[in-house]
Length: 303
Image 1 (cartoon, rainbow, N blue to C red):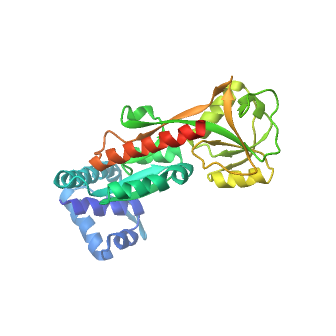
Image 2: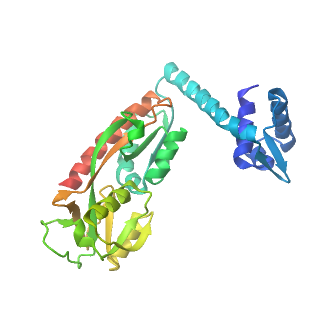
Image 3: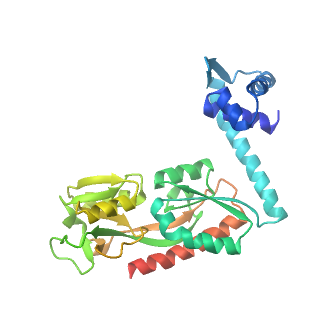
């Protein structure tokens, strides 16, 4: 059995279709079917069941798929390790972040890393915190910029604390008494709110703060796009609650820090990696550069 047999098997299992897998692998359908048949014959176990034009995993195939993926991941790590030992400065770097983080932090850090690591090919993935953590678990990402995740332990570089911000259209006025430039969580009860979807770490933090304050929230819109929330703020639809990673609006908006009992509601953020997967040396350098850049940016937001 060769690694290519495992690649073929995993490709067919993921597409559940011989024709689609063959197109992805740039093989003919008969050739791919032969390779799968040879693998089943060598292993003396049926991996796939044919159901018309499609296929599905047998019980044995479902069990062995996880092992196959693990072997391919380890083989990929072996190749990356060999490249790192042979040169140490070239390779692919897969990094994930939320849309607002990509917009706020990555243009500058990409420009810098192209200068200091010109042989590294950067591939970016956009997603909410849940999707990024799952990608780290699978080994699809080397690095992810997220809130701190205890399951990865010390496999991270701290990148500061992101304040939660409440953005209005310049006409809305807070109820109650708050320090200048801040707004208490309790003052948001029954106010139309524009929020990020629940998969984002900042939304999880905000929901927890509302539970502690025991307030009812009135959600006008949930979105994956911060710019959409800001556009609706400008239209007078409500207040947006967003993390400080969002690029701050200039004119026509009020920006206040969210506080609870006078203390800022903040989210510690880090550049994470999965300690169970190989991390190329250039990824460590990128993580350090990104975390340093984030700390500088967030200190400006805090000021």
